Amino acid sequence: MPTLAPPVRDERHALREFLAYHQSAFVAVAYGLTDEQARSTPTVSSLSLGGLIKHVTGVQQSWMQRVAAAPGEPRADDRPFEERAQEYQDQYLMRPDETLAQLIEAMTVQNAESLRLVETADLDAAVPVPRDAPWFPDDVAAWSVRWVFGHLIGELARHAGHADIIRESIDGATMYELVAAAEGMAPQPWLTPWAPKT
Image 1 (cartoon, rainbow, N blue to C red):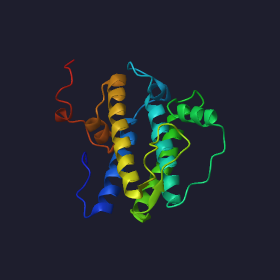
Image 2 (image 1 turned 60 degrees about the horizontal axis):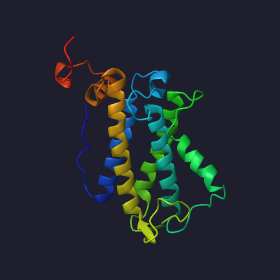
Image 3 (image 1 turned 120 degrees about the vertical axis):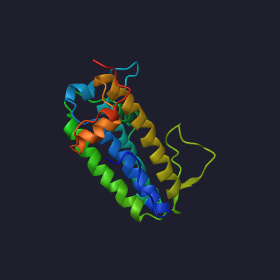
């Protein structure tokens, strides 16, 4: 039952293994949920697990388009900013017509593409900073592919923490027991020593 990233040989292997480790958290945290549970927002936040899975899929897709194009620019998105912003906001919502299985499948496909690029891309290649959104810095010309993967790992880790809290709020399940269940292990009392006694 791996609950830590494995040992690594070098920088590229470290980027690959930590990226894969954080990607896997979203599959584990959704284990055993219904669509309704994945769509629910049980905390004071408006985030749901389904919405987070959509978001980490979209975030990876956006950054990997930039990595694949480096040192050039990805194909321009000529849609109005408002339309692009609405699409970004939609990433946080699991719509009634979406299923958890569909969202996990889309994430799995994107995860594989991200891992392919972390294994093959030139880590020193320049990734031009986008100028079409207000949240990007205007005093930086480019990041390296290396920086992009470091940023992406941080982004996934941050949202995996959000997902842990949401899942525990839904049914009390924690990551250790979810990983064990997903791998077919029998529940162990030491997995959740802090769980309330019934």
